[in-house]
Image 1: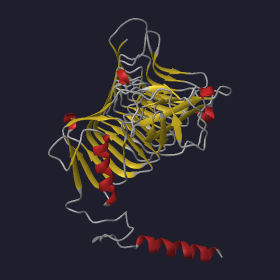
Image 2: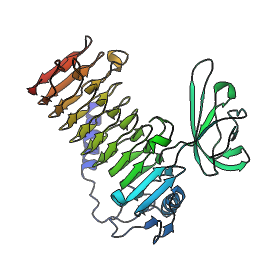
Image 3: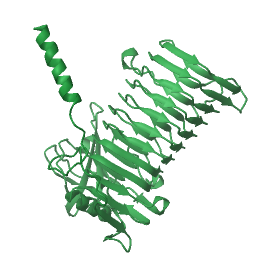
Image 4: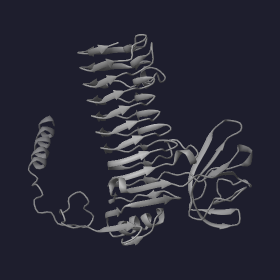
Length: 422
C-alpha cells in the first residue's frame, strides 16, 4: 500500500511539473486567469467638457464605470475638473478608475442629518424623515440607531431611489429595525469611492476630499475617501485622500491590496486602515500626515509590508494589535508622533495580541511626549524583532523610552539601534 501511494505521489508530481507553459494565449470563454495582452482596451472618458460622458458629479462617473463593466472591463478616465459627489462611485471588477493627478478633484458635498419621523421595521424598504430638506432622490445615505437597552449600534448604507414628500424608497431592504425609541437617524454620508465584492482593478491619479469641516463623522468600518469590502487584488496608486471625517483609505477583509505613492492627510481617524482579516497588504512610498493614526493594522492582518513611507505628525504613527501577525515594517521615516511612533495594542491577552512582527531599518525622529515611548509594546505581545533602527531626538526635555516593554511581553529582540540626541 505504501509503495502504491508513493508511486501515485511521484506520478502526480511529474504530471504537474510537465504541464506546458502558456505561450500563445487565446481569449477563451470563462478564462480570467490567462488572457492575451491586448494592445488597446475599452476606455471611456468623463469630463466637464470634451469627453465621452459630460458631467461633474458621481452620476457621470458611475455611468462610465457601469458601461465599461457591461462590456467586460477597461478604463474610465476622469478628466481634469472638480466633481461634487452626493453618492459614492461604486467600483466594478476589472474597471480601472484613472484621473489626471492634482487636476482631478472629487469632493464630498456637505452632509445633512435628520431623525426618522416614523418607525421602519427590518422588512421595510422605505423610511420617513422628520425633515427632508437637503435630501434628494439618488443620494447616498447612512442610517443609524442605538438600541436603548443593549447599546448595540445599527449602521446601514443605502441609496434613496424614490420619494413622496418626506417618504423615501431605498435601493435595498433594511433587514434591521430603525425605531424612533432608538434615536434612528438618516445622514447623507458615504465613501467617495466604494468597492464591495469586486476584484482586479486600479485606482490612480485622483484627489479625494472628504470635506471634513462640513460633514459628520462616519468611521472606517463603513466609509473613507476609499472604502473596500471583500475585495481582491486592488492597486491604489498616486491618490491623495484628505480631509475626511473618518478614514483616508479603509479596506475590510480584502486581500493583496497595494497602496503606493499616495498622500493621506488630515483625516479625522485613520490614514490607512488595512481592516479585519486582510491578508498580504503592501503599503509603500506613501506620505501619511496629520491623521489620528497613520497606519492602523486592524484585526488579523497578516503577512503585510509597510516600507519606505513618510509618516509625519500623527497622534500614533503605526498601530498593531488583535492577531496582526507576521508583518514587516521597514525603511519608514516616522516623525513627530504625538503619542507613539509604533504602538502594539494590549488587546485581551496573549492569544489576541500581534505576534511575530519585524520592525527593521526605520528612522524615528522626535516621537512621543516627555516620559513617553517611541515604540510601546503592550499586553501579551510576543516575538517582536526590532533591528537596525535609528532613533533621533532633537527636542530635549525629559527622556523618552526608545522601546517600552509591558509586563506581559515576551521574546522582544532589540538589536543594532542607532541613537542620536535625547
